[in-house]
Length: 237
Image (cartoon, rainbow, N blue to C red; front, side, top):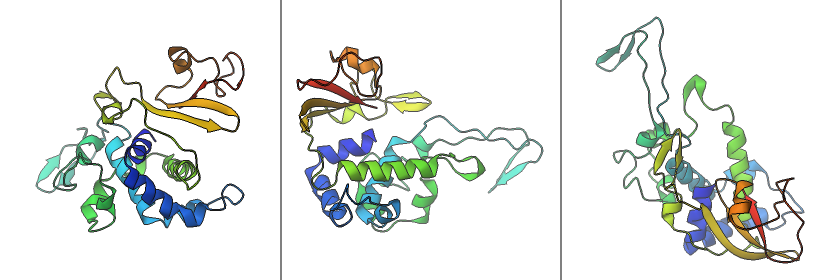
């Protein structure tokens, strides 16, 4: 979510293209709910999600697999039984032979000349019989949440003290994390009903309240007070 939100907010051309593509299916929202199937038919919207998953990796550590009793053959190599074999999405998603200019956020790569190697090596949820059980749920949530956030007429955010270094992986702690002093993806101020709130998209949620000097978090039952019409801090995980 951090990746796709940052690149949409940071690039007005991407933001406009997303809004234009979402307009036909989201114009009656929220009175009429959009379906995942409808969103899957939007090529640029899906390309954005694919490219964000490619650069955010899911996990960075190698995923070891072991054939306990039978040797495995891979091309000219024989892997003895009991020897672990691992792969890493970090390296597969950054292979320049498969993804030219791999560090560039380029959704258009998924709109033309998509090769079988690209499809095969996009593994944000791993592959095979041990792939992530929550993959389809995650895809559904990403589609619906991003569509609601960036629909035409949706909430208007402004960039605030944020650059690309706040999201790029700098540390491998099983999951990729940015630089240690990163404050996450920060947005500007927008008006929601009668409450004017500073909205912060951060990697942590409730703990950030105290750090930012806020008193109210609708996600946290231990937070102090309620919205009062003043500037409040809403932290969204």
